[in-house]
Length: 369
Image 1: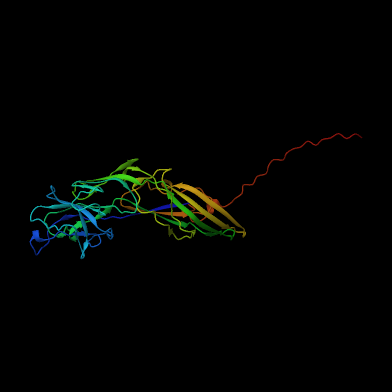
Image 2 (image 1 turned 90 degrees about the horizontal axis):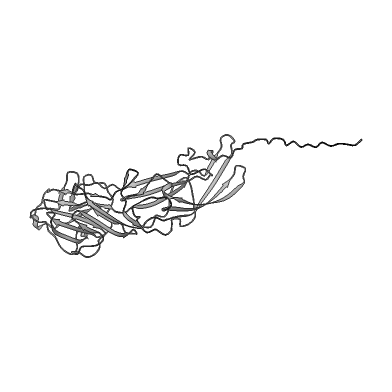
């Protein structure tokens, strides 16, 4: 069985330092608004649509005095703005913003999920589920107007570029081949692989996350777990374990075209992969039509460590992880370097004939004449 891994990693890269372009009103009469990824009007922004609903924001004047404390921000009349209070740009100084999604708690009251400080964002004891937890790059606007430009991106409102704190996980399945013609004998063999069950289980669901402000004053340093000299961005204090998640709604007859299984429920906690922890239970049926017209049926039931089906060592933050698994319908070893991935020639039945030595039997007798 050949295994493949495709990692789709959402990359949102945007500087968030703000500078004045133009304004037709006094700065202290300009209401503060926000611009998120679903309404960004940029020169070179690459990202996805923000659709997580209301988010929360904190802000500090001159990076010292509280300006906003867990204010709810939502879309109103095509503009992202604070819901419970109206804020205007001050004439002097700067305002630094830290936003998170989705909004939790009450405006003007510090929240607990997450705890947001001027230089730190902390999630504690979070249980990964159906909520897409996101945090934004810190944005510091020093010229106090909504029309801002940093030389690469243009924004109308506080630049609010969100990144995913969790990971997403999904699986695709297909057959390496379903038939084969042997050029030497002219024989034809067919395989029908039916996937009956594909259950994932055992991965951690609860953990903590601490993000610290990078020296650039905008981005966040993620937690680092170093394994064999390689750094991975995974949550800390991970615990808990998932129950079985069945990803096959009904029997699937595999073809050589990959098909999507049902996605893993919600979002998964970024974590290291360990043998015997995160695993897949596979139940399949293989019907083989032999070259001589005979048919055999066999069941394939196996538990496989997710850490062994690819070279991936961790599910990391802000990653959309897609495992594409190919089923080889012949009895070869699980060897990723198998050169016969698209044909069965490594397991063609061959014979090793030998002749046993004669067994000498002494049948001598004496006949009386």
